Each structure stands twice: as structure tokens, then as C-alpha cells.
Image 1 (cartoon, rainbow, N blue to C red):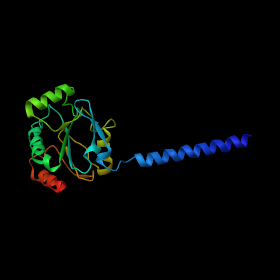
Image 2 (image 1 turned 180 degrees about the vertical axis):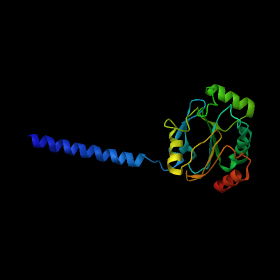
Image 3 (image 1 turned 45 degrees about the vertical axis):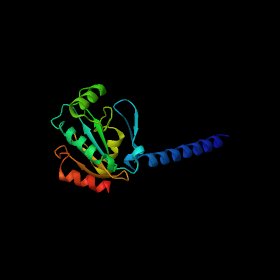
Image 4 (image 1 turned 30 degrees about the vertical axis):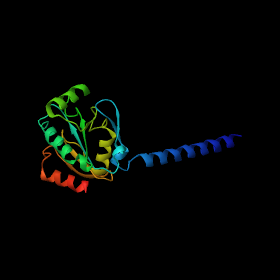
Length: 185
């Protein structure tokens, strides 16, 4: 009787170990940016899979940053490329201690000062152990992560990172515009 219990326990352990390994292996590294979702600035779900097949420009932002004026250029990119399929998404973050407001404050600031009409999400961590899974994925798979506010990620139509740009690269830079033209084609 004791032998049967050990056999049953061993079978159960093998089954759960197998399930655990399969789940871990299949879920550990999502295949594309489209596998992620955010909550938008108004509290609604913003699954990136709704944009499957479209290029994305995703950046982290902050209202009190010296680069905040880049919102103007990012809005211009949105207006220029939205009819070509580009989706622009701003991710407010206080990781660099320059986004003290709540979502209502951020939305008002962006609308009043920059007339933003591209997607904005609720505040998210973009670095560290509490980073949003999208940013963990970018870091793990592409060794890229925001080093400051307004770090830009260009995602191709397959949901893979095409290129990334530091805060020092303005939205109007030839490098960024060239990358956007490439992923839109």
C-alpha cells in the first residue's frame, strides 16, 4: 500500500512539473509587442494586439522633464503617420522622479500644453523589478530599456523591436524619421 502511495505521488509530481515547465517555457518570453496590454489614461484596457500588423512608436514620458517639449514633435509624428498605420503610445512614468501627477493631471497637462491626441496610458514603471512586462520584454530580448524619459522604441509590423532612441534624439531627427519610414513600408 505504501508503495502505491509513492508511485501516485511521483506520478502527480511529474505531471505538475511537466505542466509547470511547459507553462514557464511558453509564457516566459512573449513573441511580440502585440502580446502585451496597458491601461489607457482613462482607465480602459489598451491591448496591443488590436494593432497587430501595424508599426508602433512607444515612448516613456514625464511632465516635469527637460525633454517634455518632445510631446510637440511626437504629436506631429502622430499626425503625419497615423493615416499610414503608425500607432503612437506614450507611457507616463515617475521612475525618474519627474511625473508627480495622477492620470487626470497628466491628461490635462498633455491636452492643454500639447493638444495630444495619440494614445496615453496610465502611469507605469518602465525600469526595475516593477517595470511593466512590455519593458521587461524589451530589456530581456533586445537589451534595451529607458535610461531617461522620452526614450523611444520603434516596433515593426511583426511586433519586434526595430530600433530604439534615447531622449537626446528628437522626434524630428533624421534617424527616427528614417526608422519610421522603414517600418511603415
